[in-house]
Amino acid sequence: MQTRRQIIVGAGLAGGMALLPGLVKATPQMRDEAVAALTKGATVRDGRVTLTIPSVAENGLSVYTTVSVESPMTAGDHVKAIHILSEQNPIAHLLTWHLGPRAGVAKVSTNIRLGASQKVTALAEMSDGSFWRDTKSVIVTIAACIDGG
Image 1 (cartoon, one colour):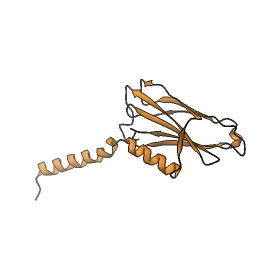
Image 2 (image 1 turned 180 degrees about the vertical axis):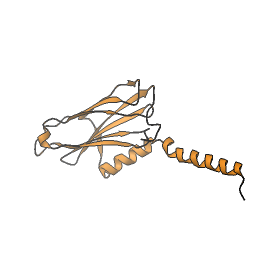
Image 3 (image 1 turned 90 degrees about the vertical axis):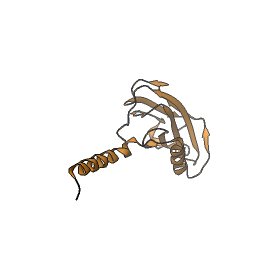
Image 4 (image 1 turned 135 degrees about the vertical axis):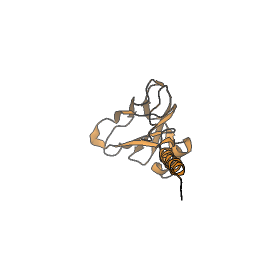
C-alpha cells in the first residue's frame, strides 16, 4: 500500500514530467533537417532573398520580420513559397507563405517569436525548382517560447 507521501511525490514528478516537452528547443541540426525536407535535397543557394530582422530583439515575443525575394513574378518566373526557419525555437519551421505570379511582389512581413538568441533563415522556393536563402543572427534579450509554442 502506498503512503500519502509516495502519492504526493509521484504526483509531483508526473506534473514535472509534463512540463519537459515545453523545454525542448530546436537545434541547428533540426533546422537543417527541416530545410532538407522542404527542398527534397535540392541545392540551396545564397542570394535573391533579403531577410530584414533586428540584430538585437529586446523582446522575443514579437520580432518584426520582412522577407523580400528578387523575382519578376511572371507566370514563368515567380516565387512559389517563402519559409522562415529557426535554429533555437521548439519548432524549427516557423511558417510558410504560398505565392504566385498574381502576388505582383515577393515581399511578406510578420511578427515571429524567438525563444533565444539564434540564426533565423528565410528560404524561397522558385517556380523553376531552385531554392534561395538569407540567414541573419538575432540576439534576444528577453526570450519567448518557454511554453513550447
